[in-house]
View 1 (cartoon, rainbow, N blue to C red):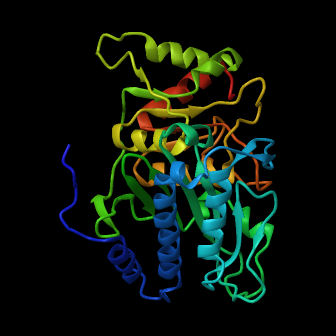
View 2 (view 1 turned 90 degrees about the horizontal axis):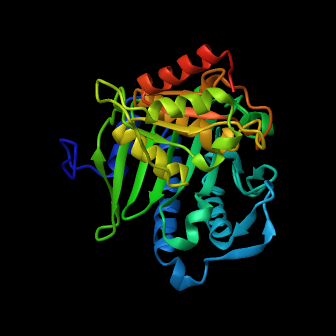
Length: 343
C-alpha cells in the first residue's frame, strides 16, 4: 500500500477552503469552525505524545456521568477542545461525553449557527499503556440557524442524518484526522516537522466485504443468540475461502473503525444482558462513526434500524451498533431475520 493515495499534495487548510468553494452561498463560518477544531487536535496530539512526561496520565478521584473513573487526560482533552471552540462565534452550544449537561458558550462571546458534540478522548482504558486513542466529533446546524441566542438540548439531539460534518483524530504511531462533510471521507496525516495535516487518502472507500470482525468477545456469554450464531458462522471455514474471519479488537472505537474503513469487515458492539441498550453513546460515538462509514460506502445499523435515522432522546443515550462493509452488515441482518430477533 503506498504511503500517499492522492494525486495532490494538499494541506487540510487548503482542503477546507476547496470544500467551502463548492458551496457558493458559504460565508466562511463553517471553514473557520473546522480550522479551530484542527488547532485543538494539533494541541492534543502534542500533549498525548508527551503525556507520560507531563504527568497527565492516571486516574482522578472523580467519576463521569457514566459512573466511570475519569482519567486526567480525559479532563485535559475536554478543556482543550472547549478553549479552542468557545470564542470563535461559530457555535451556539457544545456537548461532551465527559460533561453531564450542555456546555454553553460564555456570555461574552457571539453565538453562531453550529453545534459541536464530541468525545474528547475515546479509548480511555488504553490511555496509560500507549495504545491508540482518539477524539470523535460531530457538527450540526442548530434547528433555527437565524437565531443568535444560546443553543439548547434539542439542537444537540438531532438524528445523525442531519450531521453536516463528522470525523475523528487518532493518536497512534502517527496522528491522523479522518473527516467528512458529506462528500466522501478523506484522511490526513500530521507531519510534525512542518506542523501540517497532509492529505494521504482521498475519498476512501470501504471494501464491499472484509475478512475481519471486531467485537469484545469477552461479552459473548451475555449476547443474544443471533449474535453468537453470526460469530460462530464467521469462524467456520467456507468452501470459497472467504471464512474464517480474523478477530481484531483494540478497544478504542477510533482505532477499530479506522481499520474497518481501510480493510473492511464488521465492527460490532451488541446489546447484552447487562447492557440491554448497548454500551456506546449514540450522540458522541455511534452517529459520527456511522456517518463516516456510510460516506465511505458502508452500512451502519442498530440491529433494528439505520443508525442515522435514530432520533436521540438524551445526550448520553446508548445504542447497539453494527457497522462496516455492506455485505458483512447485510449478512448479519440475515442472521437476525433467521433467528426472529433484533437484539
